[in-house]
Image 1 (cartoon, rainbow, N blue to C red):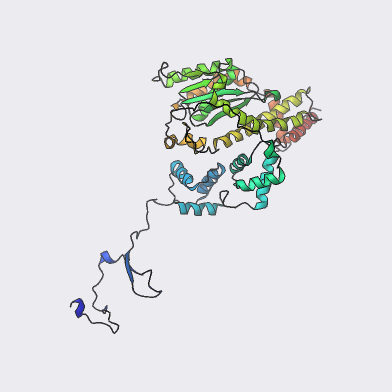
Image 2 (cartoon, one colour):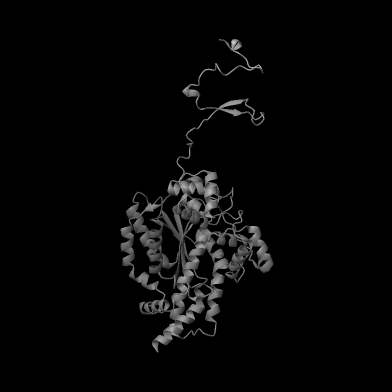
Length: 461
């Protein structure tokens, strides 16, 4: 029977009684109402379900386990909040391929948000900002620095909110902030990739209080590799140990080192050259020297980091430290007081320095078209993914057993890095446990100092 011979219903439509049965290939066809048809109207378009299994290019989506929540919290604490960056890191670090909408759902269920998602109540956000201002008595940190410091603690607050609180409670700080517009202009730096060259130098601005710093920074990425607080950075044996510790931490060494011409780099130069000759013998010294000796102002990679370190961090350390040194309780001629001060303040300053370095490595550098080295990301981004920024890793792998042996043999350097003798170290540890292990911060350091000194005095009597 042809179409025009089929019986028609009263409304003129062909009856379905004689319609052919559906084949298996047509079983995935669904009859859906068209956009223009009214609800309930049976006239619609036939559309194929193109993905009946529900599988897509992302593969199986991992469930939101406690381990995944902790991973997301860790990224959040490191100020990684952009969806695309989070997805890349999850895929690169853990093999998790998660779509944008699923990631948003997981972040919400984990209680994580960026500064635009106001998960922190306004009154709590204000207090967090005030706490940061309390850690900056010299008022050297601007809204951007405070925002980045809070973000590394997982506390994401908008810059507008931070500026508002600062205007309300520390308005004068905007005028006090030291200008940086008169810096010396220099020619652009160039490089192949991370660990092509490490720039090394010492910082002496805290020496007046008895604390020296020695740092090692990667030239291409700008990553602050290793910064150490020591009693003195003038000893070659100390700088040699710091370099070995840096190589061990990084997992390898750079192709080249660069320093000024100070005598303190003697051991570092010898160790660096010997390790490179042994583990990268194909690098010809004539073409790629293991070391570059520069005039101090030209050792720019490490030098340009000292100014922000001192003016936004060091001045505050000195203010907190001298608040106790110049107080009525501390006795400069008392050997126990000097040893206890060192026992408390050297580890405390190292922790604060580690936090500052972490902040700098997660600091986002604005995109600069004229810059030859990478921009538009953080030093950690540049270092982890050099291929995304036109670079390639130059790290030379070093046998960890060789490093451990060299560190074991560096007896003089490790001795010169001690800030208290072994006998007092044991006394202070015992006293600290006895008084209940109070938390030592910049605000509480001198209170803990007094408690420990009093305990030792009573114990001796």
